[in-house]
Image (cartoon, rainbow, N blue to C red; front, side, top):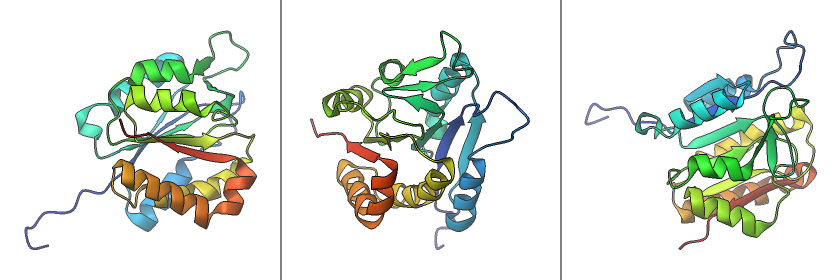
Length: 202
């Protein structure tokens, strides 16, 4: 490079929950991130969160200026409609709603995209997702409206991240990302119930 500086690559900030109560299972989506780093040189941060406190601690970290080059937030948890589960789903405080996430992220997600890799969380009225985006100022939020197979979703995520990392972080760029993934991977999007909502200009 003529100026002697290396281009700063866009990265993924991933927070992952526990998938099984038996901790010997070793299931993780970290290998997906490692493949993306190997193929695209895309850096990533990966942290485990087994409690609400850990989740919100790492979300606060993600919002810091030092992590502005990691604009894609990847939340990997079990979930249901409008919620994700932290830790043991049998506990009364295991559920974290999109409203709670919105309150913690309010006004601080400019030029960022939120991917929620959990079953059924995106099965929610589009107007409420627009409220989430307007309040957080995120460019887009995406995830699944159905229960998903982990292996199939892992394969899809590499294609998704390739699209999310390849366009400008503007509303126009986010819409281009959405068109690309929904067109090129139409079959997988339908099978998985994938949904991506881009913030309306305001």
